[in-house]
Image (cartoon, rainbow, N blue to C red; front, side, top):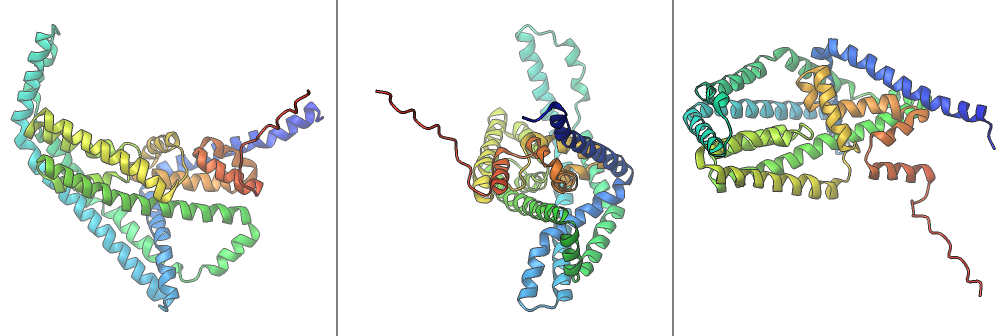
Length: 375
């Protein structure tokens, strides 16, 4: 049996590794907070180019020179980003132009709700004074400010474009450097390889299933008769990149327009349609097609959304999962003594796969031997 001193010595590295991870995360978060205007768009560009790297290798295997393959992938990413930004600006502009004309309808619904509360015996004197302050022009002004902020964020857009350009040039000669890293720090190389695979799956899966959800949402809104169905479909696609709460953000505007245009029945129909589509595609179909795309537990995904939005700003809502994967790779996966922290970060199926790799044989439930009958 091990002595108490040996047991304490054996547990010290685990406690120390947890302290190192927390300290490293704290220092990195403080640094990122002050350097967010540069680091966030640069990291965004890096993750996008990492996701497109397999396409570049495919072009190289097809016979294209390395520099040509890199430039083609770079131009493709530029086109995709430009189309996404223009579609977002268009959808927000259309929403800002449409919402003000529903101000009177919203005020009428609000007053009807006050009368219903009064019949139920609720004192609504304090709420009645807000009736005249209802003005959807404020929401339109807010959307206009978002559009203006999107179009004026030229500095960060320039950083994304420039970083992607230099990454394209640099990607033509990385094999020797990667072999050097893998030979000197194999744990770090394995962690980075897992990070590349995870962030690639995240962007690809979010994009593909975001498109599927957006198309189905547009069809559902068109059947229900909600105005600007295509606008809300674009919004659903964009907000799909925001984990956990993106679905709610994309649901609120069409549900509100359905209430004002067609009444409570249409609003309920929109909520039901969005909920059914979101649940069936993102909760049932998506995991069966790709498995655990990133392996982070739902609680960690939600906390990462809050944490990274606070640290790096609005772009942190979109980069929450990739930033968490990067921190996990650098602070946990690259250090064998700290990998036990994954028990608090990953899903149960991801943990089971890690146990299989560590043990070298499939995990099976322990079966107790049956006791012999003592006749």
